Structure formats: structure tokens, C-alpha cells
Image (tube, rainbow, N blue to C red; front, side, top):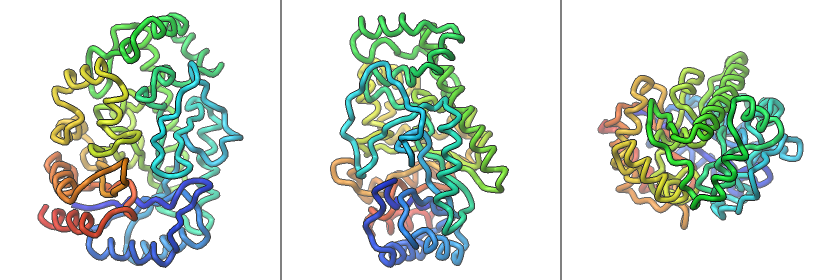
Length: 373
């Protein structure tokens, strides 16, 4: 089994505080004990940091991916086409890192998509990696409340929804007349895609999937044309469709996906956090349709095996960092996660989401388990 290390260098405007020599020493330790295939790093920039990472990984024969946000917490939000929600949303308060507010821009905007290429160019002046890792290429999750259920309702997005025959006003009226989280409950599941009894919601869900897939197709094509590899961060298979990520459509477009199999994370993308935020009606439907309690780690095998046709490029993200109040794990969690991923047929895992916050015990546990698999 191989490991990809995910290493956060901070975010735009809030670069990593740790000095470069300490980062190097920590990374060297991980490279010494783990069977490391690659490094995902980014996106906070600090002079000399990226060149150091490049020199070290190339000397060790490790492939590299620049980690970039696509539709949330972007580099130049003032230049982006904004996302217009149905009504103002309340901040979740789940910000493990300063600057991570999960403020989304419009996923349908070509300008927003093209800005990712500009950010990549700006961040690769010191070192050109082997590829790019696209994060937050999705809609905001409805776990944040009903304002997020429609996605973007800017003029262009409204017109696309209207042209496809969905009645936004009727949906808005239904939301207002319903208990929170009860109007958009799926009633069937096919290849990771949920279907809804409400025809307008069914149309809206399809449009969201198509919009995200189009964005990935455009960006993957642009990066592939430069000779770069492309990876994508996604929600877990049981949740991905609810943020517009159709994994069966995305996988043929990219070199790998990292479904976030986060069972101990109480923050966006954490499976128990998301299920709780959706409310009992939706979370109950997910359990029924998947035939598992998706918040339990035992569901990892069912979820990952739903993507078995692409098992070589499905690299599940496994929690390795400890973030008080947000991600409380133990060495036993690391052990069981690695074993479950291997038992699901995955040969590569991404130690997530920031190996700089992993303890020596947890890193050694991952290394010891991988040696036996």
C-alpha cells in the first residue's frame, strides 16, 4: 500500500506559521518511515517553502500536487463572480484554520473557473509540481441550512434552471412551508446519484451535477494539456451527489479522486457533521438507500466498493491529523481506517488533511499497518 501525504501550508492571506526548516525536518521524518508515493501541498505561500518541498520530493522520487481551492476561499474573491444564495446563510463557525470560511463563488462562471489557472501559475513560480489537486470544486453543502439547498441563484444560474424547466419560485415556497430539511429528501439511488420525488428538485440536482462535471472537464483538460496530472477532492461517495459531485462522471476525467472518508471530523465534509446538518429526514433516507449507517466507519467498505471499477485511481482520504474540537482521532482510528481502505481494494490512501498536525504515534501506526498490507 502507498501513501500520499497531504500537507497544509496555510491558506490565502494566512500562510503556515511553522518555519521552513521545521517543515523540512517533519517531512523528512514522514518520508523515512512511510511508503510515500506523493505529496499534496498548498495553498498558503511563503517564500522558499515551495522550492524546498520541490527539492526534497524530487530527491526522494515523490510526485507532487499543488493543492488549490476552486469555488470557495479563492485567491481573489473580489474579482470573482459571487454566489447568490436564496437568502443569507449563517456562518457554520467550523473554521479549523484562519481564513477558511467556506465562502463560495459561482460554480457556473467561466471566469471563476479560469481564475484557477491563474492562481496555479502564480503559485508555481518557485517550483512546478507534477500536477494539481482541485479542492472545493462543488456547491456548498445543505448541512449549512436551507439557503444552500439551491446552490447559486445568480441571474445566469437562474436562467439555466428556468431553461431546464424547474420552477424556482415553487421550490422556494415549498421550503418556506416545510420543516427545515424535509422538502428535498431523496427516494432512490443509482450509481451514487440520488433521485427525488419532486420534479423540480430532480431537475435542480441534475443541473448541479452537470455544472460541476463541466468545470472539472474544463480544468482537467487545461491542466492535462500542460502535461500535468489532476486530482480532485470530493465528499464521501454517500454524500458527494448532494454537493453536485457525480463521482461516476468525474472519475473518467481525472487521474485520481480523494473521497474524504472522514468519520471523526466535526467540520465541513466530515460525514457525521454533514449527516447531522442535513437533519433526520435526509440522513435517514441516506441510511436506507445505502443500506448502512453512513456515519459509522464500517460503511467505508460499501462506499468505496461502489467505485470499484476505478479502484486504482480512488485514493481515499483518511484522517491522520488531530485538531482539538474538530477532529479527535486515536492511533486505533488510524489503524482501522487504513485496514478498511485496503480491504475495500484501494492500494493508495491520502493521509489527510494535514500531516503536519499528525502525532508521531499516529504516523508510526500508519507506517506499521501499511508494512503488513
